[in-house]
Length: 237
Picture (spheres, rainbow, N blue to C red):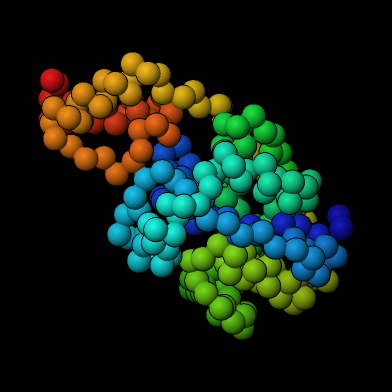
């Protein structure tokens, strides 16, 4: 098998870890052809909700930075055009792939690709006692990071990490520097109905609750979960 040298190094910042419930807030990607950077893609994404304090502290991203950003429906096509049909590389790459694929499916796009996981490589080539997160792996391999927990900077760090591990171990273990099929099954989410939105608004008004999410951008499942949670906690009208 041939060692992969052309790929899209990808990293996302999100509101949380669950692609079914959480949203993308930043996309960063580096296009690498034959080992050389040939382009980059970077954008904030409006999640139509306020960020939790832990997300703001971790990323340094503020609500006013994403409030004027385009929604994922406006950027997913551009990103897929940028990515072409290249393999996607990232640190625990299935995480980033799952968010992008869910967004793609929701807006009528297809996203099937192969992946290269630098976390998997780090687990193979780093000592057991060493931490394997992106920051720790970069430090172990002598890669200086410009930033941490920002999408474009982390995408570039994963790219450099892959190149360094390939440089050190590619001749000895070329078979591990190949891509694998990315598997994440997802169905298109249905938009919330007018009746669902009206019922939720009535609940919010009755119980004097202020939501951190914009109801106009909720799916049918999302609005159902929120409604059920409010009823369980506060009761019906």
